[in-house]
Length: 374
Image (cartoon, rainbow, N blue to C red; front, side):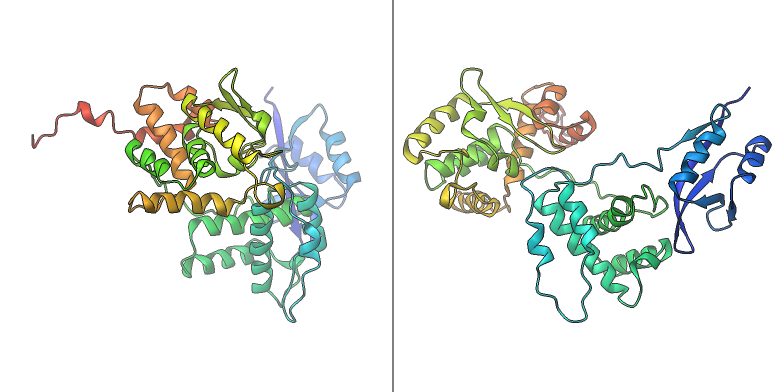
């Protein structure tokens, strides 16, 4: 006997939260669905539905127990938006001086962001994108907006030539409200995302990296640039480093709460270790490895300025960013013959597919190819 399946979906119909019941045509299942209280058919969603109440949800499981398998993958949330970092002060957003005629994020939206402990950058982006969206429909109640309204708004962004990145952020911010705040996972599963642009990482030659390091202003700046490159760190990972994360006995660096809230270890350069010891004797940091005024963590903007200014002094005409040093670390390891799986671990990538992008910029394979012109 074939196994029967029913997939639960989150729907909003006539401003009410509903449970969608999607299944392949089956007479037995259809009869059982028809016997559910106040069940109705939606021509728009092409499925039956009942009101989303705890009692109705329990009844669905009870009715089909032993008869059909209930697929809840589209009904309960498993996704994790953003990543943990020092949380932003939500009160600053709540206490903003309001401008007449402008709509602001609902308190429930801000509270959920705070409870989820999202990164500063994620919170600011979500709030900005969602407020832009709800102000576009300033004459409508948020709860009345549907898939078509969202699709029209995204079309507007595309026509105004907003970047793929911004459009994706806007979709995430909108989905967060309906799927996380209103607890309706996969509410807008039919919303199309723009096709991603597959850009190759920008990489520097090793000689250029050395020149940047040589043109830093002091030992502190030298250590910052050297660490970004020699350990393949993201900027925020560098800023979160503490003194105890440098393990000179095992020659590794502990990276705390990297992307995806994952700790990992990466390699420590022997050459850099000497500079770090000189830096410690001169600057005497107490908590974070690199500290700004008041012994607080160094700012992201300061790190970017250090890299940019050193590159300018080294007469490198490319626009150099801290992340380019991480890309260069991975590419140079690959060119020197390091196994891709090891590079994946050092970078903290979940999948080798992410790391494989560096195979497209590694040039060692080109040296083995004889140019037809030659």
